[in-house]
Amino acid sequence: MSDHHVVVVGGGFGGLQVVNDLKGAGVRITLVDRRNHHLFQPLLYQVATTILATSEIAWPIRRLYSDRPEVTTLLGDVSGVDTAAKELALRDGTTLRYDTLVLATGATHAYFGRDEWEPVAPGLKTLEDATTIRRRLLLAFERAETSKDPAARDALLTFTIVGAGPTGVELAGIIADLAHKTLPREFRNIDTRTTKVILVEAGPRVLPSFAPELSAYAQKVLEDLGVDVRLGQPVTNCSAEGVKIGEQFIASRTIVWAAGVQASPAATWLAGAADRAGRAVVGKDLTAPGLPEVFVIGDTASVVQENGTPVPGIAPAAKQQGSYVAKVIRARLAGRAAPSPFRYRHQGSLATIGQSAAIVDFGRIKLKGGIAWWIWGIAHIYFLIGTRSRFAVAWSWLWIYLSGQHSARLITQKETMRDES
Image 1: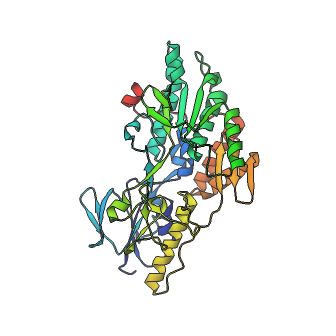
Image 2 (image 1 turned 60 degrees about the vertical axis):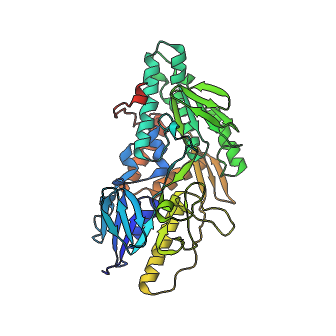
Image 3 (image 1 turned 180 degrees about the vertical axis):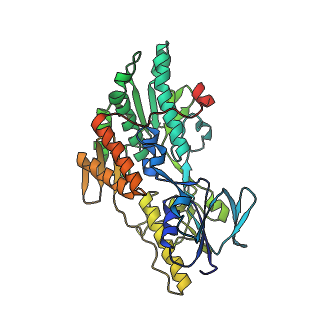
């Protein structure tokens, strides 16, 4: 094994792909992440909406590389990068030297300058976010069951999702299904079918990254499920009492934020240029300008395609970038010419609406409805890690499909002040 030390920051799709594709390259690898698990983010909303358990979409990073002695996993939070000394600084005061650095630190939710909304309108990026939303969702029904005040009950049974991208659409559909189909027979003092699910989008249509006809289909399915879709109406305030859409206030005790993302501070660490979402601007080989030994990939990077459009912040794009970086590193170590500039190959877009409908956009081929839902499910099961997870998720989905019952409806965390209000 050579002394070349590759440090990868971030155990998401991009970071793990780099580590996987460097197997046998003869380098030392250190993988740093703030959490000890890899998260399959495309199914995170299903944890939030009581369909899946946390263990079905997350895996300990150490276990993934237990048979790779050249890989060291560290639980740590990066605070900065000294590019001159080639050192990574962690918040516990330790430093880590590197020969090659890969920043795949992802992104978090953005509130467009209104960060004070976060406590009352949590986003959905981590397992903690998902379990918080799940707890608030279930507690809303429990408190409505015991409430004697009709106005308070209505507010508890009003759920607002801000942002009609894939996450917002998927959340709205599942919450509507849960309230209108799964729960009605379980409560005695409330009729959960009176639940209001409001999906708010400042733009002109839901799922704007999809073809207009698929977007229109998704909106119709949502409305058939009872979702109140409000387009072209920005949210102007969020509070513990509710949400203000334009000039209209709606009493809503549960708000979920799915409207935007903000990249990690990687660009700040590198003192480099960034786009409006804070993503670091990188070259065609995914390196930071002037720093050939530093790569930035995934949601952390602003990568522009040949046609001028940005590479989307989705899992397949991060995985492709991870594979490309591993090829560049291998070529450098072998003294070979670098591969041609990175090119993103779009493999299609998928989104599900409720428990039995989805849309699939493969460019020339566009599908919707039940067939698209099966394709969506098979694709997600295929990309899960390990036979156990694939079986567990497939079984959970089959059980819900046959019985209509969600299996992960446990309120397990201590209530926060917001939950108690």
